[in-house]
Length: 118
Image (cartoon, rainbow, N blue to C red; front, side, top):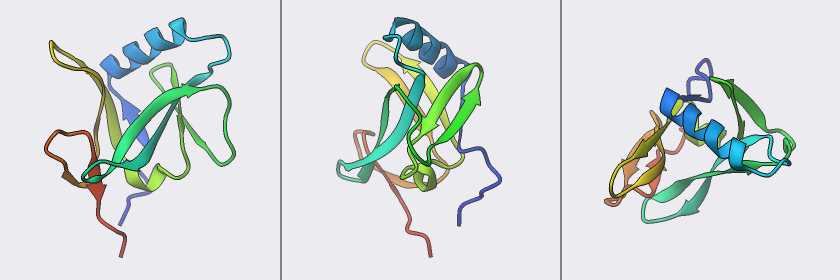
């Protein structure tokens, strides 16, 4: 079962720094970043990070390290307690998630699965 006492998501310093840099380059209508999930890939779900131009109905807002993260309401049960990080190396740059709810991940790391609630 999910632990509702945990924050929905936390950011590492690296993720917060990258989010702030993205917001500085974004158009004036963006008010933060939105995190969600979509059904795709061989494991079933993948993370989505996009600019948020407004708070959608029933969205949670997490403010961490000076960054506003809007959580798509359909994603909360999949990402509760996750940590959002930003990684950059010679082959990859992007946000990555450490998610305690994940029960599996595909070989390439692009999608994940979560066990169904009992």
